[in-house]
Image 1 (cartoon, rainbow, N blue to C red):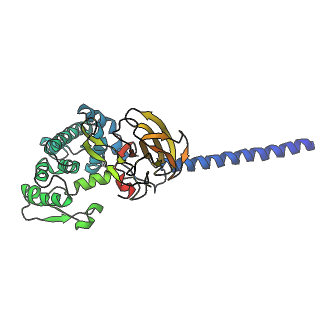
Image 2: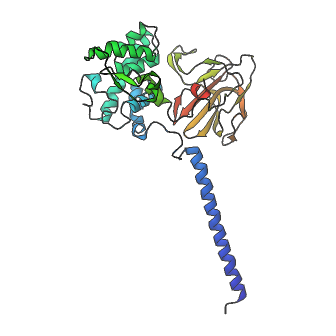
Image 3: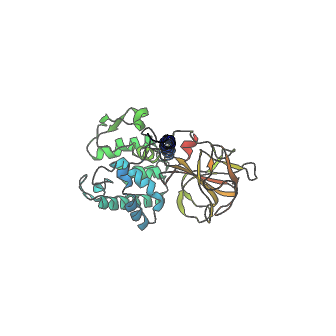
Length: 351
């Protein structure tokens, strides 16, 4: 017979072993749940530009850099997702831009080179004649004649103008002079009858690209306002930079204190402080990792009141509005990122 002390120690050892195993299992479950929240692994969580497109991002960035157009990367990604979803060798559907038959290009890198060169030419014309960015995006589908058409009709793209151009210019040039249509099912077409004109291109093209730009982000009004005064003084989009005079992308929205002072700035969505630092352009800024590929950034602060690694809740104060960095006056510059690409915060604020 084994001594009683051995029996007791054996039982204690088994209990401890099972306790340790249970603790490890519990920690694993908690870590998995925590990781799932911040990386969006749940199949019902936010979608994004597909990996079949994102894998070409470094080459796209390299091509854009040749033309000093790095700020356009998210638009090029969205155009590519709209054109092919990354599923074809002519990934940017560039063949027709150089007079070839559709899908004649069989090298994705060459497709990107031609597609970005074509996009660069469209952007150059946009700047020369003074039309908006959506006109340039729509021209990637319609051709450069659409730029002149919009310049002669107010300078701003609308779906209504694009439909007229599709019916009266594009379709007749390719043989459809009767206004013949065909069914087209897409959320962007639901309000207009779900049709396109035969041989008329896609007059919803700019809407589709904007949809791709905003895919994978929460719906309208999901972000809380980062300031009490909800007046936007400068919107997201291309503008003349107030300091340098350059025509470039303003990658966020600006809020100024209409009643003066340095009012508090709040987290627009709960998250973890990934950066709380100073840069020459943003001045004092805070960046939050909010989960599901979403990050929010708050710049030009007078004072930062949070630390890197700190968890903050929606509506929690993270600093005070200021004019640090490259700034012309007291304001908050607010940015939203999806998978490292800047997107327009306005729809997420319910604007």
